[in-house]
Length: 154
Image 1 (cartoon, one colour):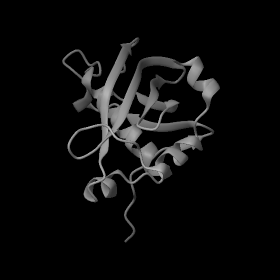
Image 2: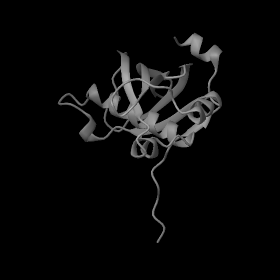
Image 3: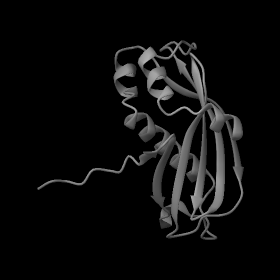
Image 4: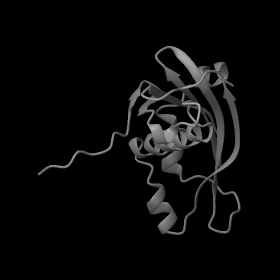
């Protein structure tokens, strides 16, 4: 028997698209998605975006090279998602530097923007100090980096 694999989403040009469904466990007493669940969805989308770019975070961590850490996150909640909604997480690399990158992520229900996050992730050594990202990771990001897009959503 072949088991299905979880979806990693897909790239549409420089945009990574990742679909989630709102389950009962995602909602609060009022039936609206609990605010912290957007963080979980954004984290999953970022992780799968990296996976599709062949950025192996686990291997880097296990080799003692380091890992990404969220250094800043700015969230803006605009509309609520509700039980059974299909939500699309749209992520793109808005800024790239030798030691970090900024990723803009937006959660949509159809055409309606629900939540937006501007996230800076820094590459840190096992001792927690910032360090340069592996060269091949920067090269992978450059394949989907669009400066004009990054400037528009900054």
